[in-house]
Length: 167
Image (cartoon, rainbow, N blue to C red):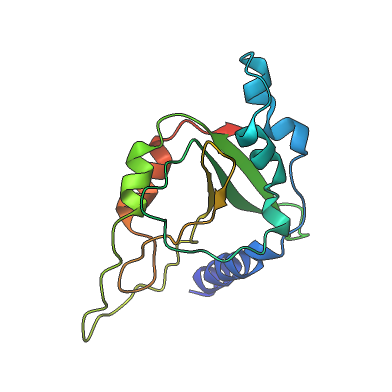
């Protein structure tokens, strides 16, 4: 019981420190997948370089109608508990293919909470995601959530289906 409480506290702290965690992948590493494929630098690559998960202050917003994502940057928080430091850092992953199912999942509305809804104590951190269009515009979309504030399973499943490249 105590171990479960500690685990939940660590997960909650990880989610809270998501916006203030230390560490980021170097900008050159983030755009490396494009350079290795022979593509020239573009507005998308430039935008990818400007996304730094640990320094982002952009608030999530509804995905604009007609927004077409050409690339995505996923910020995943890791917490190192093994050495006792509890140090957290972001892992930045990039994708520029197969984003259509993810965009469709992000466009789903969040259902309203039902009266008397009982939520689980197990927390799933809300993903931090940035989408980039072909002109280099960056949007941090709102992640649709269930009545308990947890990310919709369709969004989590769509995130798993994307072929992410770690910088």
